Amino acid sequence: MALVTTNAVVLKSMRWGEADRILTFFSLQLGKVRGIARGARRMKSRFGGMLEPFSSINLTLFDKRNDGLASVSQVDSLESFSPLRESLDRIWAAARMVALVDGVTADRDPSSAIFHTLLDGLRSLVRTDDPGLLTLIFQIHILSQSGFQPQIDRCASCGQDFGEQSSRFSPSAGGRLCGSCDRGSWDYCLPMSQGSTGFLRQARRIPIARATRLKATGQVRKEVEAIVETYASAVVGKRLPAKEPLAAEPEPVPYGFARKDVMEGRGAIHGHGNHSA
Ligand SMILES: [Zn+2]
Image 1 (cartoon, protein in one colour):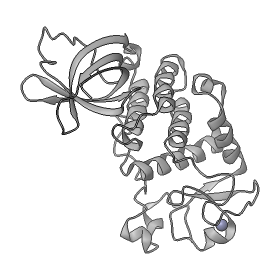
Image 2: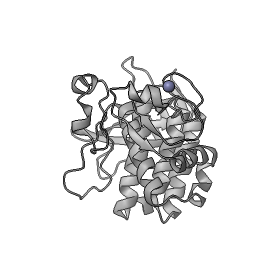
Image 3: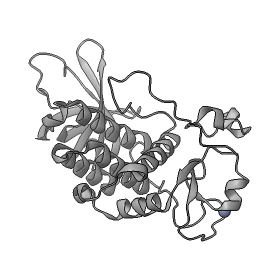
Image 4: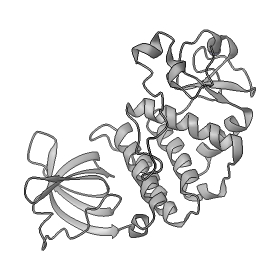
């Protein structure tokens, strides 16, 4: 590949050297790809402010090196999403969206479903009055589209269909566990009521552009947020950006299911106190 032009969203932007930036994009044609923008931090850079995180752009990359780092040759702004940078809850919501896409995708593995979900997610985020709920539904979509769909229709461990009864969600198994698998599990599990199972089912069916029509309140919302957050962190392998960027120390999330203490059954001491196996 030499010169490629594709639509892309900026996931990450990092200062590099005196005047350059190294960027991570999610592009329609190449999937996740990294590129260096020479001189991007100079006052009169031809890239202007077009390479800010969350920006939707038309990007031309020159790919002559073999280290995976392309050279950004031209950028045209499509949507800057500047309203997202004007409120803190929108900034963190957008930051969590791009971090999840960055975390669950492999380099140069294109997915038009993920690309359009990301774009529609950012567009909906400009309009919504509930960024937290939109982010939640976005996470459910991206997990499903990247091959990590939460298993809620049958037991994620033995495959048994155990209906709609309340159960618990195992982040390491990636889904709900039936009673006997739950009793035999040393994993940190989270409570999952029938209402939460129903919400998850609806959330993965509704297009992200219409996600704001879905409502979740009270216990269901708390449960689904805990499940999706813990599961997404387990999949990504690290904690996603804090929900409240200005808040003090975030509550510990026991995402490291491969950690020795969890494997040995001591996971509960790190949790929210609802694992008593
Ligand atoms: Zn089972």
